[in-house]
Image (cartoon, rainbow, N blue to C red; front, side, top):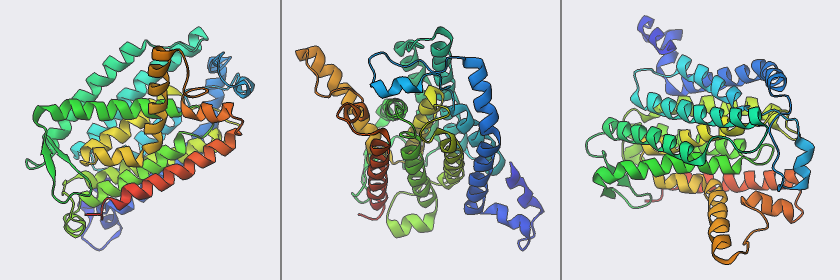
Length: 360
């Protein structure tokens, strides 16, 4: 929104700063961070009053989780509010990728909000039907995938870019849309499964968002793409403003979510942020790199799939409990130990994902 102030610039004044994505990204970060610090406590107090008993705790979960009874959920509202305000203030609103990513974020956040509301209002762990959630998610992802394909240059539209392999594109045709749908919905649900311990999901989300933001900025600049020998996707650099806002809002939330958490992110936040990561990957033509950068989320999701399939086939379990972070809890690892080690793994994977920009 504030980008329009560049119309008053003569090229050598304060208003000229608004032309630079990096300046607006920094402004978006601090806007979201300050928003989180200001409104975090009032929001938590309101959620505590409205929800009463807070998020229901699974009966079959680790014993340590029963001490968290009464903690309010829907803390994702704080992240999403900070993210929306900062993005709408500092991003160029004539950029299609900004609106595609915002659309996915808000819509998945709405699904998560409905799920969280159903859980706290009924005081049980069953929210919106998984089939309904999946169907709505696929519809949202289908629109975003098609819109991204139309926004891409003709040479990249409906193409799958392969990391490491120079100038390699796979023409997927209309199959690109269902592929991109899987990326977006899969990312949303993988982050949702990871959100099981205080601070476990939000830091890896911020790390992945920061990495994808750098990638978006790089592939959105023709000089960078020529140097790195990657595909040029004009306009994606603006996504850096969005990811900066996400990181700022995420840090504001983490201030209250650090152990012991004063509020849980809930599906409101985890589905929205996971969907956002998937949408950014589709927009920047880095869908496969997302599987590396978000490798922790992939492992969490795979642990659930493996557990369910193996149990149905043999009646036995591969893990003591799925997702895999609960397996380590059952083995006696302390919650902060699991969280910090998973953060370290996320950072390592993010650096590997960044390295794919230069490995050609």
